[in-house]
Image 1 (spheres, rainbow, N blue to C red):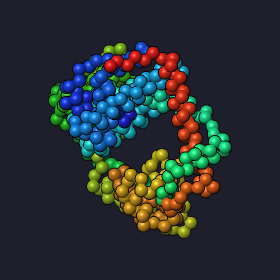
Image 2: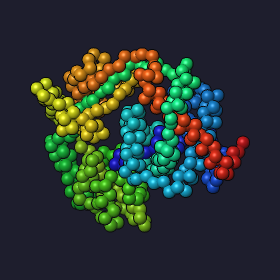
Image 3: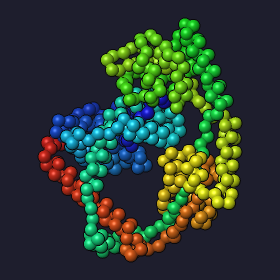
Image 4: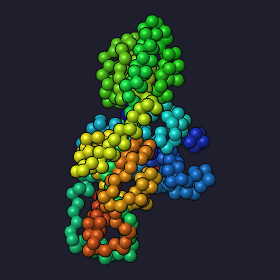
Length: 426
């Protein structure tokens, strides 16, 4: 898993073999100079069904409804992508990498392992990532186009008041909300784990340079499940698809040349150049991962408890300590502030459990989740109550603005459709 990308939410490959075998591809729609295939529609619909806990085989009627919705969404997406390209909307490689990282990690978390992801998707991780980089980039361009359109829309006080009066019966009551900050300390491989991995990769490098078969060593020892069964072969790729440290070495190799040990965020690599075709290369690699030891886990727990003791000292400032020690890069600079959440909609059970017993201003004892060790601060808590425009103007204004934005956007898409050739086949 050395690549850094995957799909956004939905996968355009044969996820369920039974469906993939039944579908004979044909064109379902033509959008400008692009087409939508029956296989694409079926695969997306099946994925939406699975994400909605609908069994596609047991609920064919629900699947058919999803197909109609998905087809309309696919047509809209292609129209918006064409508009984004006309407007030269661009997204950075880093944005694409970040989204792909997030999505592949989520799939591994949901299914339990890299191997199960590969079985579920019917392909190797490395191939899936290469195949879907373009789709991710296209989706990000469409989102950027949408943001550019929506950010120009404003709303007046009179429109907010009218929205409130017209929707008063349907606006929800406010649920219990909490505002929280946290300090995250992740379990990371220490010097002992790194030294162990380094010795293992160094021994393999000696064996490779002594003439042992690279592919056989990769099959036996590599810890990249996406390539080890193919003797470490990754297939052809271009710059921007691998982590930087790996690419810097791989693209400088000549066919048949073997690298020295390369360290990346995933561990230690040995790289063998197979072939170069223009701007693309095909390589094999052996990966030995950096793995946290039980001693690393103990050291992390000790560290987080020491930080908790710091917070007991007179004058201790939670935000300043979070800025100094937290491993959460997205909240660290904000003093660990996570924001406001509806308590019953929080995804992490441990967060809900810990917050349930806290008073505003209180700081929790350290506790562990799948992300690492946390120390929580409950900044404030608001009980569930009925919504009123006087007390909750900002919330009503957000809803009113969102409603207006969606209406404007929908009308804009309708206008774009009038100027685009769309032919839906029966």
